[in-house]
Length: 271
Image (cartoon, rainbow, N blue to C red):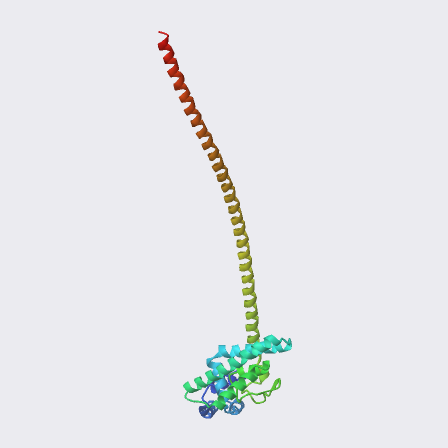
């Protein structure tokens, strides 16, 4: 049997309720070759807190990833001495770790193994320790945690914390996966920023075009209004000229009538 296969047995065993662990381990070891049997029989029964963390890894992997990713961000902020980022990330850490520990207690309850508040605190302590460095994160992500973890300063004692393969081997995939997720997130964030910038530029361009259209419309309206004013003034002048012409016409007609009457009278006198 290969190390990968004994690790597979470990993965199965550490998903069991602790009270079921020993009997299942002994049964799994019976059919193995002596060397492999010794490896499997050396697997220790997990503490209740370690089992709850393993349960979270199996049933809430996205939330585990979120906590560990936050730990990576915290480490980065610490290395860059970014106080504002540290304050915000520390606040998020308290919320996420507390919520995830309570979720673990709820999962344990569903599995038929209710846990105490002390165990919930130990789960939270382990999750917080897993945020301290890449190896501790790998131990948490392994799903075969044997005991709870505790961060002492910036270091976490991982001796005997993980069953099966050494932590150096266990950490490769989780860390690579976490870094890949961070890279994908950075790429997605960059794409969102680029898309937002493109949208902003398009909106600004559309706004400038609309401003030009409005300015053109205002100029056209003003030109038409000026023409209307000119036309109104011309109409007023023409109406005045028409009134004067009508008055002159009326006077001329009156003079003509008087002249006609005089002519008629003269003709009658000449007879």
